[in-house]
Image (cartoon, rainbow over the protein chains, first blue to last red):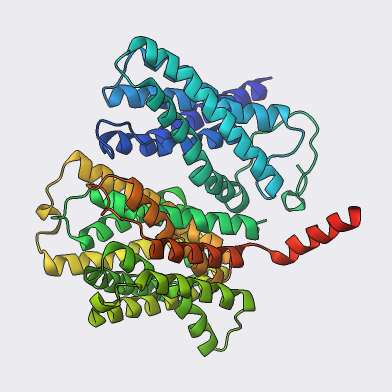
Length: 201
Length: 309
């Protein structure tokens, strides 16, 4: 009984440490881009979006929360905390959650990007996810700040949430899963289409 | 385990895309900061990051590889610094687009070097190299008279050294751990660049006007271009041939053209596209397709469909 409690407590601390580490990783990637205005007065460039699929697929719900909290901290640190940050928090949770939902909960296949078919599926998830994120934040920004060009804002969120997960996120996942040995979060239902390279799941 | 050919090609394209953004990050660093300072600081930050994340792995590999590994990374770092210095001086004699097209000469030089050292080069690679060469030739139409021979030879010299670097890196990546290679190369390049920086600017760190933008730009460069792109490149090189990797690198010119056309003038030197440039770019894309697309598989799929039909 006591060993079970000990095990649970170790698990809790380990999970907490991973959660904090994920937030730190988010901040390391996001904060410099907040400081460096690449296109002043236009919008910020957010390569941190490449972490959305990584946090969702490899770290599950804690990863999704870490992503949303990381975004909130970045807003506070960069003095850009506004009413729309509430929608931003929700959208930044949903962003990685869509990847988790599709690849871990709904898909019957083991997650990997070794085949063209899976790459295509993943690209579709990226597009749907980007539309969802942009669709969640834009109405709030439009209502709270009528002076903002809503169409331009929508397009920029769409580009940020799709281009980086596609161009950098996919190679990052390949590097993590196929070369550095990271495993997607465990799933409970039966899986198909598992490449031989991954051995017994 | 390990990435397959399709994944390796995707990673090499990503590396090329990241390298092409170098100019955008450089634009956020004031001209008063010496290029050697940038290379030194970003190399050292990149090395620290890699050592922090993979300390055990790097320590084990250094123990295993010993002197041989250290000498090899030293050679790679010296080659890396040499071609970068030659590029830096050579590019001063060119306009942005012709300079960028000329850098793609590595694609043509590399198979020739491979042939000279009696390594086999596939027919496909020769076709790709020829297509890229035609692309470069198109970019020179109407500009031949203005080309400075000294600048041209300096760039070609840089391309020869880069070709040797890629061949060596490709060989060593198959023998040693890519993370360790990347960390050691970053560290040694950082130290060599610091020495050159010290010669030209003895005040080194004290000579830089530090502000949040400079610090942010250096960090972004360090972890995207140095730590991430370099490590990803070495992992991908393990699964690719030196020739195919170089052909994919030639896509950098396409990305640079896109930045030159779309980005604001205060970030990237603007590029006004002309017909020859576009034809040249098209040939480079064709050269890449010839290398990347597995035509035997495409044929097999076509045959399969015919049989089904």
